[in-house]
Image (cartoon, rainbow over all chains, first blue to last red; front, side):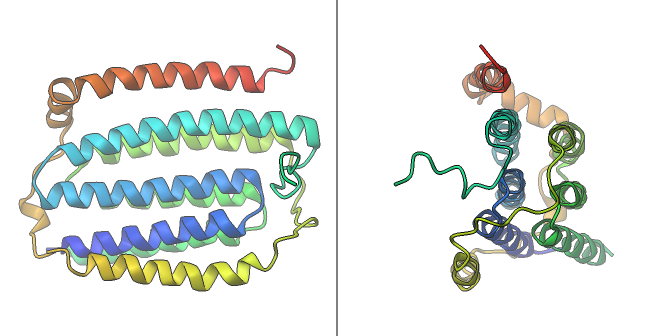
Length: 100
Length: 163
């Protein structure tokens, strides 16, 4: 048997990698990919807790997280296309018109 | 046997996730992320969440990542662009802070009772999830359809050249 704690620690490590990627990458699409890593780590944690407590609701929440991830990817990639059309670059440091 | 499968696919997931960050070109990052999603779906099967494992492969690796790859190929990105990197020192600050965050999370998880046999758990079949979805979570499920509709319209509005 596999203890639930191993899944939780794996989820924490994956979430850390995603968060790290969100802060050190500068490409806008790479940031979206890092968000997907973080969402997947949370999904893994949800399923592990769902199995531990023998309740199906954790897996239903994973379904909702999946829906949010899909809509986030659609809107985010549309924004990426719009920004690339205007600026010819996806570096987040260059999109700083609202910054002073 | 189960532990071997767990360790192999956990290592694949972590390695592929690190590879997403290491690669210079976004295309290789996206392909590496597909590998990570597949490894996580194997872990879902180990947790007996069969429906979510299938959904993970079909929707995540099959639909969302195809969208990513499609946009990356559509935009014809330059190889790497880190010229105007004004916050370069964040990389060196981020890694120790990230490790501290990992330490905090694991220290919290250490107290979680983890001596539960995952084989004797519930089965996450499509029937069980569907029953819960259409009884207890009916209102969030309907709200989900609204969210998808709004995201669809938002994507069209943002990506259209001149409205």
